[in-house]
Length: 299
Image 1 (tube, rainbow, N blue to C red):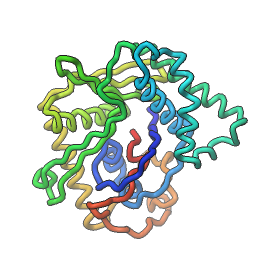
Image 2: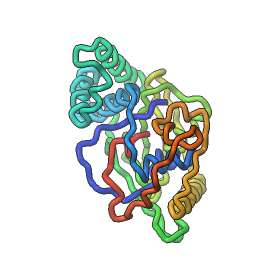
Image 3: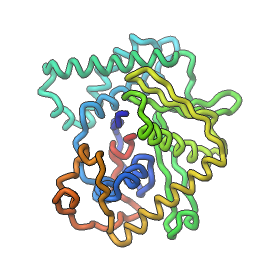
């Protein structure tokens, strides 16, 4: 499963919130959460991550076309301009390749076109009328529910929201990687339950279906949540947030070494590997916890 970094055109202050990615970070390693959410240390995206950004951009723009224009050829033609726009928003990504004439860049763009083509094997976009694409959803839990006086703000970006004439909701998420093994499947479902809970809180409706489209191997996974399950999941998020706030008060975000450390950008700063953790900058001001970045939207 590939994490993607959707392109951002607007930057504005955001109160610190819990997203699927940041919740997963804290569960994986509290120190990683601190580096990303509190210190906001820069990270170097991989070619796979950026390719995922390009593919997500293409699929978003595909649904901006009229239904009769949504064919595979149109999808392929959207890849190059999507890459140019992603690069314009984040010029540093150009360092991933030697230049416009780099043959590896051509192969990389071809692989992105292949993933876009794979999407058409999973569904016919001409028959889909989404209510929204790249939809920002937020829901705030009461301070008493969050456990320590600071309300818990849930925030996430839904790739696509479909709403039937009957009012039934389907949440669709695109994954540029292959269908995951058990560990990563649980992580993907965590993300989708997060979206379902936020929709329950802001719309009062449990989504009828959570649908994951894995483009690399052209597989689709679907899940039907129920309200009782989402209420239990809400308690899990509150417990995670309470643990984050306890760590925030003391500054004690402890590392949790695992096999995932080999892919961490912050390994050199981690005491588990002989590094030195930067001084704790303190918990961000709730009124403006820093600018929103592409990584805040990454899943």
